[in-house]
Image (cartoon, rainbow, N blue to C red; front, side, top):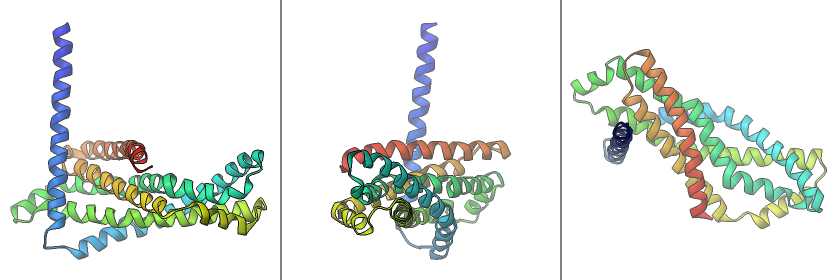
Amino acid sequence: MILAVAEALGGGAIRATRALGKMGVFLGVSFARAATPPYRAGNIVKQVHFIGVKSVLVIVLTAAFTGMVLALQGYNTLRRFGAEGVLGSVIALSLIRELGPVLSALMVTGRAGSALTAEIGIMRIGEQIDSLETMGIDPIRYLVAPRLLGLLLSVPLLTAIFDVIGIFGGYLVGVKLLGVNAGLFFGQMEANVELVDVTNGIWKSLAFALLIGWVCTFKGYFTGRGAEGVSQATTSAVVVSSVLVLVCDYFLTSVLL
């Protein structure tokens, strides 16, 4: 029985190591194809439109209500200490440092990442990827690289939109509804938010975009056969990407602080 348990643990560790190695090679090849010509600008623009433009509405709605909730909770907490004037800086720092990059990445994962996985997975089970290889077209350069670049371009811009809309939502509730002085709201925000906070948020959004593109395209590219394989790959891509975003956020925060 002990040998069976040891064999099972060892087999699981070997399979996990092989999977990580396969994913690492896939990411390296994808980066190499994305960084070398010929560049397919049309495909990249198409992916930016699909990932970025079509995600604006969900980003705006999520950001607005996130900022409003932050204003309500922050005001009720700060009022106990007579510090309602710092509400603007609390909202801005919370959004720029943490909530903006994380929630934007999670929304993109749910809306666009799942679609990318399903699209590539359907092409795999429909043998379209095999057809590209038969015609001498590199499927990673044609399918994966534009989606990866599209995410790297779109997610930081969506994060910036999230931050602006979230701060505006906090302003509406904090200033217009709860009566915080507008000059104090923006004055404290200007005094406490530094350039390093903005750059750290951008670095986080780029890291999250890379994780989403890596996991979602990998799951779709190596999906199992049949409709069940596509559904399992899509579910796995969304779950793994979301968890990795949260884990990566912790480690990036500990390094960038």
